[in-house]
Image (cartoon, rainbow, N blue to C red):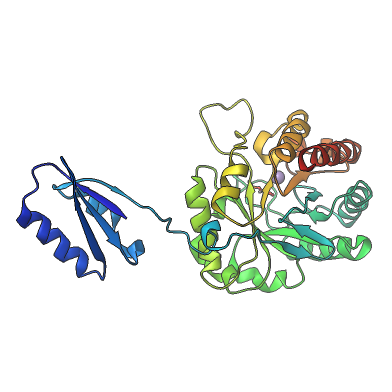
Amino acid sequence: MITVLKQGTTQAQMEHLIAWLRAQNLDVHISHGHDYTILGLIGDTGKIDMDLLASLDIVESVKRVTEPFKQCNRQFHPDDTVITVGNAKIGGGNFCMIAGPCSVETEEQIIEVAEKVKAAGADILRGGAFKPRTSPYDFQGLKGEGIRLLLEAKKATGLPIVTEIMNANYLDLFADVDIIQVGARNMQNFDLLKELGKTDKPILLKRGLANTLKEFLMSAEYIMSEGNQNIILCERGIRTFDTYSRNTLDLTAVPALHEMSHLPVVIDPSHATGKVRYVPPMALAAVAAGADGVMVEVHNDPMHAWCDGAQSLNPEQFADLAQKMRVVREAVTQ
Ligand code: PEP
Ligand code: MN
């Protein structure tokens, strides 16, 4: 961490600050420039309150040279993390297609969708059993029964499954789930993240609606700091001033997260756009940007979906998109 002192700082003021920093087990390297004095803080600066330091009268600016996220940081782990579930691999040059309905509705629905997305080349089946809805009057998901139906679909097709958890109290219900999803609204539910960190289940962590990439990585760090290293990052659109699409897909997140972290990055163009006609172009753009996977909502009858029909592809549209994604993937990985 680098601290620049204001011009006019007295020797006594500087020594007072240095004593305070040394008392926090830091070494302080002093360099006197022509106009400014710079303090290089060496040691575990993670516990230093940067805002407090920056607020001091004699401090001009403070800059971290290392990030507070350590375990997900590529600096300390240069090789890509690869997550394996069933026959699917995510990360490290492996591309993965996740598809399925917003919500599990009936056994017929989930099995039909599972069979059709599998035939089109999907690697993993998605489906919400616990649904975080904006309105308490909307369908809240089939909960435990939804997970049971997903497991039936897994048995019928062999596809691994991913489904969202909203409360760690229900963790037992997820024993046979392959990947546990943490939804955008729970990205900073730190107690939930810590509980999931104690498991060894792969976690698909979605970026919050208004969270920075660094906050996103700090949430991954919460899970990893408890021991679980199996995390997939998922960008699903953020809130911006424009409401024309449901959210704004931040595709820069793909190269930026790859630069900062070794964790795989998946794009969800369905929640990012909210409109079915925008999903294929954004999915293809995600593949071109180097995403490790794409997660798309697919429903056998979008007009009658219990949730998010407007952004759900039908199985034929998904099959067409899957084919195009393979072509783009091949083009950009040559
Ligand atoms: C979902 O994937 O089902 C979902 C609710 O997405 P998000 O948390 O990104 O809104
Ligand atoms: Mn949805």
